[in-house]
Length: 61
Image (cartoon, rainbow, N blue to C red; front, side, top):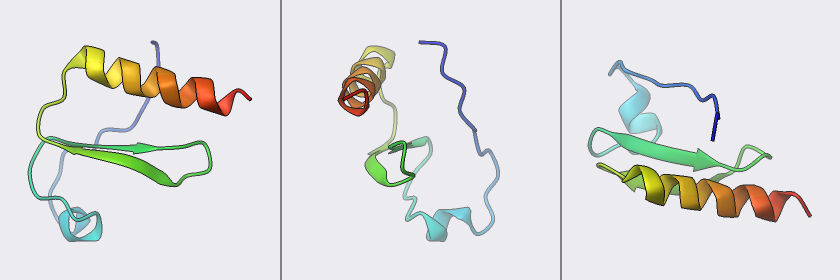
């Protein structure tokens, strides 16, 4: 999909700020910066690609 995204690898105060319960946690935001989904734990690559594709298609309207 060639999507660039930030990865946060440190602890600190990020956990409580985003209600993180486990690592990895994947948080998906829309183009407006609103969180649309949060996955706690492993998410299969195909599932993530499907979710992102659906989100991107919806934003092209």
